[in-house]
Amino acid sequence: MHITAEKIKEAAEALECTELKSFMFQEPTAGPLTKPRRSSRSSRRSSRRSTRGTRRSSRGSRRSTRRSHRSTRRSRRSTRRSRRSTRRSRRSTRRSRRSTRRSRRSTRRSRRSTRRSRRSTRRSRRSTRRSRRSTRRSRRSTRRSRLSTRRSRRS
Image (cartoon, rainbow, N blue to C red):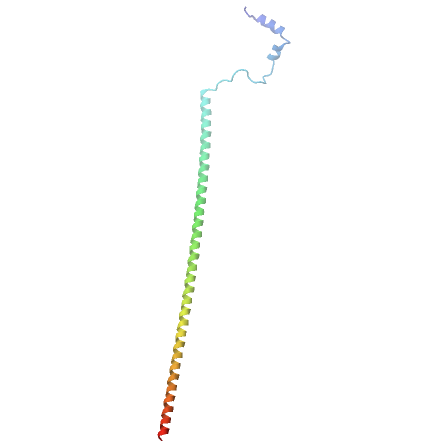
């Protein structure tokens, strides 16, 4: 059966008020019925390049952020270490000052004790001298008294 233009017209007129007319003059809201054409090779390449570039840039930004985080961590560690070292040095200086103060106090005490002992020895020596003098005087006086008694008896 050969389809001619007249037969198509007749069919169209018969189906004027049917679904065919509404389908033919329907607005394309559902989108194209055919599959979209494949993009050309050049457009594919450019899209690949752009995606690669974005990936690379995102990787680079990630790396840079990691590096910055690492550097900040390192700087924080170094500041902590320097603070610790300064604290330790301050502690050591305090300890050394305390030890020097203690040693000075001990030397002062020892000097005082030596002075006291010297004074006490001087006093004891003086007292012994005085006692010796007094004994000498008493002996002299007894001798004189004896001599005087002897003389008086002889006469």
